[in-house]
Image 1 (cartoon, one colour):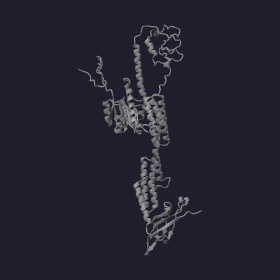
Image 2: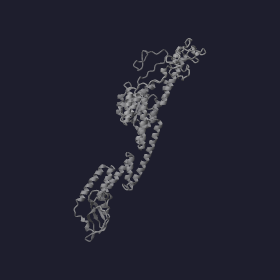
Image 3: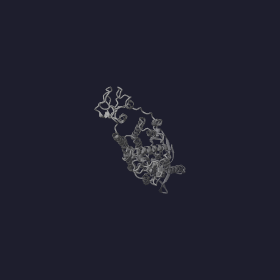
Amino acid sequence: MTGVPSSIPGHDPSVAPRPGAAPARFTLTTRPLIALTRDAQLLATLRKVADPAHGVVPVGSEVDLSTALMTSDAGVALLDCAAIATSVAILTERLATQFPDLVLIIAGGIDEQGMLAPQITDGSVHRFLHKPFSEQRVRLFVESAWRRHEDTRSLPQLALALPRGGRTKRWGLWITAVAAAAALLLWLNMRMPEAPPTAAPVASSPAVGAAASDEVRAPGAESPGAGAVAPTDTRAEHASPGKTQRAAGSAAAPLAAPGEGATAAQPLLPRAQAGDAAQPPLDARVADYLGRSRDALSRGRLIEPADDNARFYIEAARELAPDAPEVRQAAADLIARLESEAHQALAARNAERAQMWTAAAADAGAAPAEIAALRRETQQLSAARADALAQAALTFNQRLAAGHLIEPPSDSAKFYLAQLLAEDAANPATQLARHAYGKRVLEEARGALKAQDFAATGNWLAEARAAAADASDVGGLQAALDVAQVQAQAQPASAGDENALTRTHYVAPKFPDIARQRGIDGWVDVQFTVGTDGSVSDAAVIGAQPAGVFEKAALDAVRRWRYQPVVRDGQPASESTRVRLRFVVQQR
């Protein structure tokens, strides 16, 4: 006993094959969705939204993907760029060639979408799923992919054998299928036996092409009222009523031009058929999506947030009514806004934003020429920014090595660091420059503290904070500065009075411009040591009023003073002393 088990999907054991017929080929009625991903959340979402009739087959590598495609006869595949080791563009091209009826969904970020722009444009990639994703968006894309898969499989086998590639290729499949069907109908029509000769009926209405008649008048037939058919036209004499009705009802035949007689190849259609068909009312769901998209556009929500943006709603409407004029117009409006945002980002010299908006416009179906122009401008901007960053980093390093940290203001390491931060704060070169500058100013602060130059120490610490230097190092130096200042003020008054020494060289302190402009007076107490050669060393501020105004000017002056050496027991000796310098605005 032979037969096929009835458990095989798609097999009806009650239908026996005809004698001599080829054996039946049994295939699975459903195909799975293969998911190449290591993202547990994405996989859980796919299983939640997947049709139970299809199911989800997870794979973790490209090798497993190849095995699954060869064994499971999948209809849809979702590829997560994070799980792909090779180029995603190369992988999608290979899959499109080897599995022409496999519908691809790619999940990834903006960079991967930019690499796949040609495949998205020509249809090799059906949808691009942006991360982070939402359950509603995943559901929408998966359902759309299965619809496309079913539409593709419903084409004639001849059309399915053609390579898949974009909208143009898919139109080619449909045109091939329609042409094959038309040829088949023509062949059947020619093979149909003719009916006994009868006279073709003539329209009795005096109005040619009136709504009450859809008959065909043969070539040579006289005008209404003549009451006869030309005997020389054998096609009219032997016309089959069935053929006449089929010809009259053919929607594919062209209409006769106004004022011209209709021929057998140009049947006269009823007025109701010849007129433009009324536009069907828009589906309520489509209208709701379009309303939401307009609201999102007005609020600037073009592609974010995930479930409440114009792109999401327009895609949802397009899945339901792709040919509706309102949907097409909404998509065109979105593309125009996305392109405008890309141009604005280019004008602001923000290559990252320009790349993001360009990728979104390409995903929405913008013209390839416009996308190519935007990408070209973005690449040029990125190259120019890279050159500017490289030049600024080079000059910064030169100024840092020369010790020009903050002077001169427009040609110092600090100046070029500010340029790097303004151009691209997150760039690795900028981060390295900031770290190097912070480390260097902390070294200057330590040196000033060791010399008991408390004012300079405070200034360098301020620079370190502005450069985001290590917070623990800055805090430690600030604490050491506070302790040193307290200890200096608490030193015994035994330090000699500067008036008891003989000064041989005097330099007047320079009155700070900012204090003069604001009319500020003050004083600074400076402690220092007179060496055996009469030079000044270890000068330090031990008190000032107001703080942070006159200290630097006082120290700069005292360090240049000279004294007659102190002599003890006939030998020169060093002497510690202190002096108060007063700063008073001169009244004019």
